[in-house]
Length: 368
Image (cartoon, rainbow, N blue to C red; front, side, top):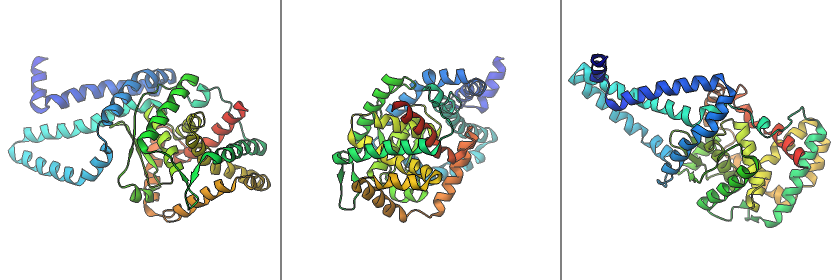
């Protein structure tokens, strides 16, 4: 056995060897996650939370997005790897294999972090079961009632919101203050529901937010760095909702429809008017869009009751998005994201983003 170990170590450096061992352990855990919802619940809530927290708080030390930096540096890093590979190949076969083992260990490290931060969130109990929400087939009356609750809250909150000369709502603080307020809101959510474990973290603005908008991506959580990254080119109410959404992922809520829903519930139960307003405005079009499909007359009845300032905010967003609405980049990223979600058990793919209708209506009905 000792001779075998020495032989392996000739070709596998210490760090890759450790990574290989950890990847085997992680694979076993991943299989258990896939096999048992109860184990996935336990694994996601108690075992992966410390890892997500460590990564989030460690990456918070760096003010810039590590993810974005790595992406921008990828051509240079690829060139360095290529040159290094050629040099090792010229030395000996053993050095080439040792170099390839190092590269493989990087891929396996990403797999390990995926298992220990994010994977179980795709396979644990669904949020409706955790919160005892009855998601049933919605009638047009259900959609109308939910729409009216949203409209009434928007109209009331609009008195506390600042609007600029384009009609767009303005976030009254910066991104780090936004992070703090969202963390406080998650504290309130944890106290009431207890289905996640909260911790302090920050959202990181993307430097290349404007070109990123052509992909229609408003935020991204990278599990291997623990960062919640946000596209700051979007209007402020979208930035606030996206930040809360990505921080839901950071807290182990992997399914997209659930992250949408959790961010909505967290924001409307916060003590900050702008967060509440952003949550209701972000979900308004989705819920009323479903109402429009069910009954156009009820839709127009709801729309007619919306405060003119809120209508102006929605019109401002529409004008903003005209520039980015039709782009090749959005089709490519949409297809990639769809494949990623389906590979992790979300059979609906990107359609799961819109499944917030059922959860939101069920929640609002339970609270009124």
